[in-house]
Image 1 (cartoon, helix red, strand yellow):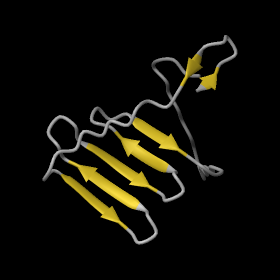
Image 2 (cartoon, rainbow, N blue to C red):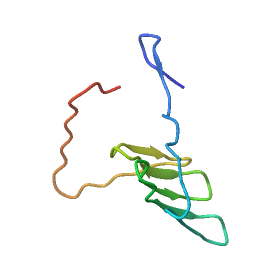
Image 3 (cartoon, rainbow, N blue to C red):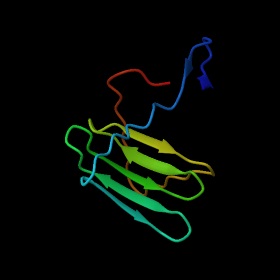
Image 4 (cartoon, rainbow, N blue to C red):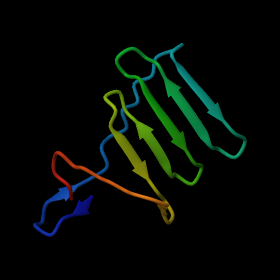
Length: 89
């Protein structure tokens, strides 16, 4: 969990895996990288997973979870905008 200054915590949401054959397609490389495309009705999601544990997942309602096991960089060569309609921690 991540502790906030007001002693509240938040953590990575649970992975929304609920795959059902034959709707789940998985590509896995020899070293363990995985691309998963799940079309299970009501549980559609995408996940790109690096063998280090770094991953990006898009869940059935469009939420994105990103986990970086190393250092993360973002470069914006022009403009950058962010709008948060709910809470931001």
